[in-house]
Image (cartoon, rainbow, N blue to C red; front, side, top):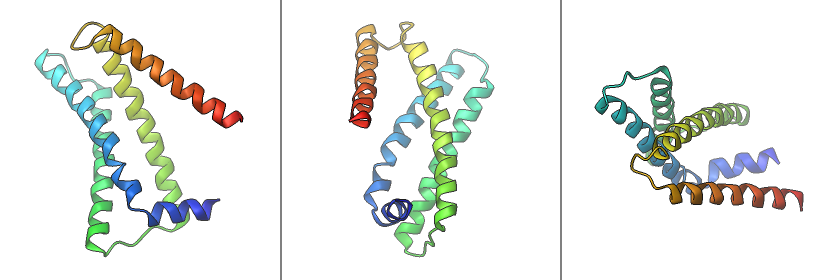
Length: 139
């Protein structure tokens, strides 16, 4: 299974194009959080700084890949190095997602730029995706 996964990650460029969508989405959330702290004259905390650094690391990794891909001079990592990179990247993504949704939903459900119905719909949508995934995994 690992050789097929390595082949998919290093062969299909489309996988990295879709990687740009969550980068932009979470970058907007982190930047909005920082902008909100600045405009409301709140101190920027440790979590905001770590979130910004994490999303910048993710952006730098994507830009590096894009450069190597477009220039054609890129040398791929060996399978073990690639999986270590993806494992670390996965942990960084988990932290950014947790931070983003904690900040976003806690601020937005308090009444700032967000509607309660949309929050309920988002929770129902995510819940249905999770339940669907569990059903697919069990079948």
